[in-house]
Image (cartoon, rainbow, N blue to C red; front, side):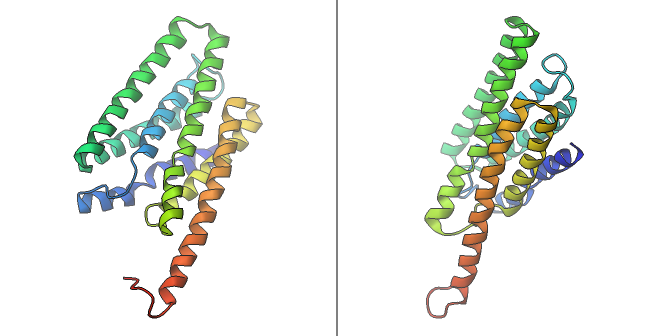
Length: 218
């Protein structure tokens, strides 16, 4: 689990170079803000799942996701700051929706459900949110395939996602916690796909740059 927390922390800080570029250029360019929205919602729900009032024996899930939620909130705020007007309004609306959804989850789980059903309810929501978070880079994967460039798919983000997923998959298997190992197993598969695409298209780009009289590779 220590490895999982370490890789999760690396995942949380991996977008920093991307946001340095965004801040420097005062533009979000073709970067998508959806991964950070999905990650924020996922961190909030997994934080709630890890608390003793919902599930027992997985408090480290709560602590690591509380840190993750802070990072994702900062990234979303920066994305909103530097996005154009259309993206700014869309991201702000999604951020409000995330907080409303999280508040609703808390109210329903505390007021309407007993302990057993509460863990099941929040557990299935955490599975759905984790799958959404892992699936959110599909937009970037589509962009990479269309453009033949990995410019907008940060390598360290893909690598840390894969490492964190496989660590928490192993942790979930050890704890026999379906709500942890199933979504992280899916995340591991999607992480492998991203890394393979990165390897293929980055090598292809390098090969293209070595071909004379075809195009400038500046």
